[in-house]
Image 1 (tube, helix red, strand yellow):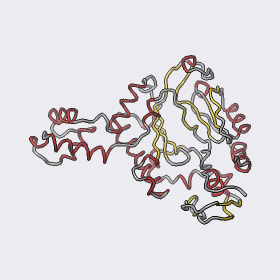
Image 2 (image 1 turned 180 degrees about the vertical axis):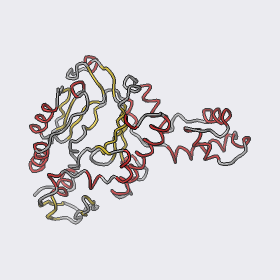
Image 3 (image 1 turned 30 degrees about the vertical axis):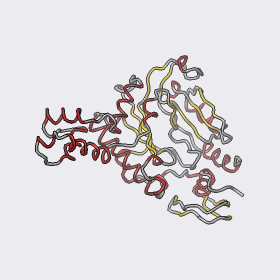
Image 4 (image 1 turned 90 degrees about the vertical axis):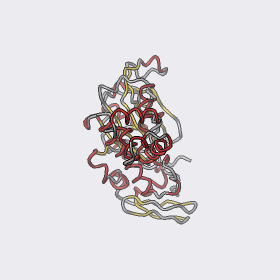
Length: 327
């Protein structure tokens, strides 16, 4: 059942904030999901004023804009939109971490933050040579991060080229032939995956470096220790829509917020992404069953069934995430 209190709180956020749209908003498809589950897509928004009027009127659960740029973003059929290029997007979700069901909320967020740091520093900057100025990192609003690349070198890349990029980052394209060729040519390789595999091989003699079994084991360790768990289809889908920055995530009530690259290592989304509108006041919530407690804003949630009085941001999070209801 849709909670009117939750909708009203989201509406308050949008009425008290002016959301800056993504760059070139008039060329992007805009869409949103209502709290009743209806998906509205293929919208054209021309400017900041139109975006904020829409958000204040609709008070949506989720808000999206396309990574792609179109000549006619409001056409409903993709070929008729006339695709003109797209940002390169990476989606990292802590649900994809091995053993995530056994991790605490804090542990999941730290691990996926570390993966995001590795993606940016080791792959995008070091291996691909993408300048920092072309990279933007956003907390997704719930359990992960989105990395946006806006650069002349990526705009016109098609799906196949983007798939090759994801295969490289995840290590799927790594095999013995590729690494052996690099080692034969360079000795201990100086960059990229061959360098990582070389380190895993250690100080083995050139003859042992070429042994099939040792090389295979080193590649396996390299993948396990160095690859990044990205949601590949998000990257190679050139028509993908992604969460719009500065909007609210409908399953947490937290802001989809930009994170400076140099601040990522210390970033705490469950402190820094709470809307100011939700920091004051308290609400009653009802927990139908015992839950695993979560910590937001330095406060731990209740865990036992029953009625509880909590801070507004905690009430929003518990209700939006389906753990509680407003009585």
